[in-house]
Image 1: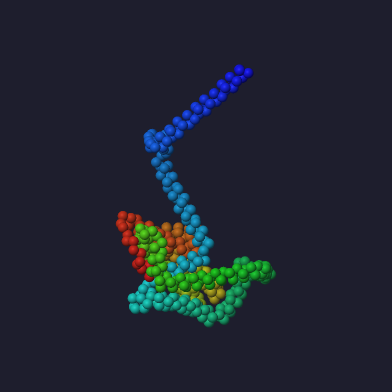
Image 2: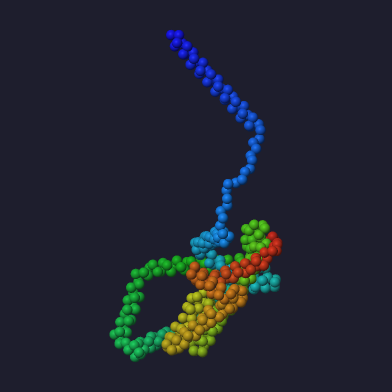
Length: 411
């Protein structure tokens, strides 16, 4: 019993001693924490163990250019996607800008003569519509006056083709000719099942054309009448420090765009005069009306002059036979070759200050990216960008004013 009691008391004293030591250690830690909190901690800098990667300077420079190029391409793709989605709005607005670039000198002259700018812009838009209407009416009257003769000549021309197939180098028999005619009729009638679909597509296309026409009409009026306010609003989107350069760059781009439109008009007029002279020499009916169609069609890149020139070839075929039609085709091709390889590269390159090779490449890229619409805006876009880049490079060491309240280049 005594041994058990002594052992129990020893264990009790041991536990009490351990508890006292733990409490004393806790008290020392509390005191130490209070001392550390009262005194600021001094951090001593040491040598970093991080070493920058050693790469050749050429690779470093290439990497810097590469990621910037990737960012620019991504931004361009995003802009292109947005433009494609809103093409029904963007393309008419671009056309309105081109029309305004052509008509703004007339509005400026009428304003200097004392007319209010809004009234002058309205008169110019109405006058343009009347001018286009008169041209189309003239063409319609020319065709209507000779419609009966043309119909008779169509019948005679078809008969001449039939006789040429039978008596010419092909020596086709009447049964073969009738077989060819039957095949053509079968091809035409076999497509009747798609007539409803095609009519629906044509109806939708006509609706888009009408909507685009009114967008062009109203946008042209507002660009001519209130271009200063529109441009001031656009410039104010930029940061205040960049507004001066944005304003001056826009004006430089506008000058280049105006020169492009005037050069395009000269090219269209040259095409019209060339095709009209060929038609007059060959005594093709409706020569002046064909010239008007060629002039209007020349504003449609690539296919406009071809379509209008094909009308001249068809009229020559109907009126005077295959030989005159071939001569007319040769004349149209010659005029188009002069336009494509002489007038557009050198005339546009001179007025727009873009190298002829740049004009050709811009047209090709525009066709690949966006078809006819791309060809329509490719050259003016490249010309404007070229003018802006050269302007910014020339003024990189100067300070531009930050006031953006001046008149817009469009008026």
